[in-house]
Image: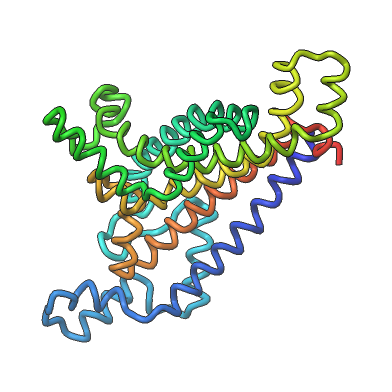
Amino acid sequence: MLRYTVSRILLVIPTLIGVAILVFFMLRVVPGDVVEVKLRGDGGNVSQETIEQERRRLGLDKPLLAQFGDWMVGVATLDLGTSMWTDRPVIEEIGLRLELSLQVAIMATIVAVLIALPLGTLAALFRDTWIDYVVRLLSIGGLAIPSFWFGMLIMLTLLQLFGWLPPITFTPLYVDPMANLAQLVWPALAVGYRYAAVVARMIRSSLLEVMSEDYIRTARAKGVFEKLVVSRHALRNALLPTITVIGLEFAFLIGGLVVTEQVFNLNGIGKLFVQSVSRNDFTLIQGMVMLIALFYVLVNLAVDLLYAALDPRIRYR
C-alpha cells in the first residue's frame, strides 16, 4: 500500500508542472494588455511613459522566459505573485474567497451523498418498480434543471412564503454558525440536487451491473442474508466508479459555481475568476488555475487511495 501511495503522489508533480507551463504561455497568447485596461480602460488620458513605467513595475518588460522562470520559482515557494489589478498578493485574494467556495462545495457534497446513496441503491434493488421510476424521474429532473435556476426558485419560495431572504454578508462558520448556515445551506441545496442526480444514476447503474456478477449469485447460493449480499459484496464494488464521479464533481464545485454565486450574492472563487479574466489579470488567473488544478490532482489522488482501500486487487497490482 505504501508503494502504491508513493507512486501516486509522485505523479502529482509532473502534472502540476505541465499545468503551469500551459497556463502561463497560453495566457500570453490572449490579446489585450492588463496595463492598458487598468490605466486607460475608463477613458483615462495616460501617457505612454506612464504605461511603460507600470509595465516595468509589474515585470512585463522582461523576456517571456525570464517571467516564466520568476513565476515558477514563486510557485515552488508558494508565492503566486501580486495581482496586476489590485496590487494585493494573489494568495490573499484567493484566501478571502476560498473559505466560502470550499464550504459550499463540502456542504453540497454531503447533501448529494446523503440523498444519492439511498435513492440510487433503492432504484437498483427495486428495478422497474414505481420506486425505480420515481428515483429516475427525480434524477432526470436534477440533470435537466440548472442549479442557478433552482436557486432562484428557492429564493422566490423563501420570499413569497416566509418573507425572508438569506443574509447577504458572509459570516465564517467559526464566528456565527447559525448565520453562516442560514446563508450557505440554500446554495448547497441548489447545487447538491444536481450533484445528487448524477451520483444516484451512477450508483444505480453500477449496482445493477454488480448484482448480475457470478460472485453475487454464489453468495446467495451459500445462504448469505440479502442485506449482507448488498452491503458487503455488491455496494462496496459498485462504489468504485461512483467515488470517481463524487470526486470530480467536488473539484468542479470549487471554481465552477459562477452563476449560482451570482444568484445568492456569494463572493466566491467563481466570481473572482470572471473578474480576473475580464481584467486580463494574468497573475491572478495563473494562481487560480493552479489552485483548481491542485484540487483536481489532490481529489484524484484521494480517489485512487480510496480505490486501493475498497479493492485490494488494485494496490496489489
